[in-house]
Image (cartoon, rainbow, N blue to C red; front, side):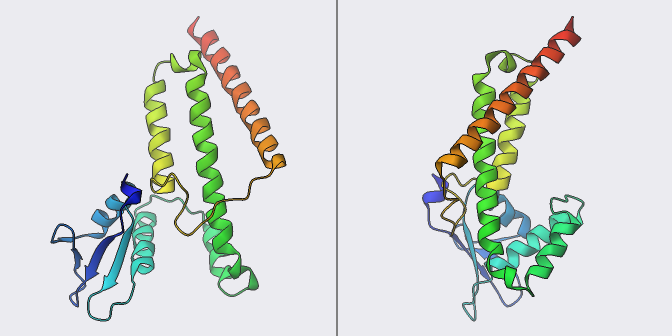
Length: 188
């Protein structure tokens, strides 16, 4: 699997060009974003100093997507992130974000599993396209990582959390059944 490989090493030359050491060619930020979407970890280092520039370039990729109108981060979230750099809360923000994305990934995986189990829903026209879109979204949100975000151990699970998950899944099932009933009525 792609996530089992060591990170793809990209070297930044003095000219600011980015060099893929695996394929021996120059790459763009969009190429790097593509590698990440495919589940590959990337490490970008300055050729001369050896400094790790990965975080800087990942932030630049996000900024470019946001500036093109592909907004995923609401202004209030961005504002809170800026504030967290100057407060004591800054120390817990990275763990909180990692756990939040882990929970999002897990919830979406469970939702997709349940959608497949609901046989009548699977027969609905366009279900395969909706399922593929949901899986693509999940992969984009998680970077293709099945074992969690790099550097995160994932959220601690307790019995009460499992019960909450089950209750949430039951609610999703109920909503899907309601949606299916409405769609059936529309088709008559």
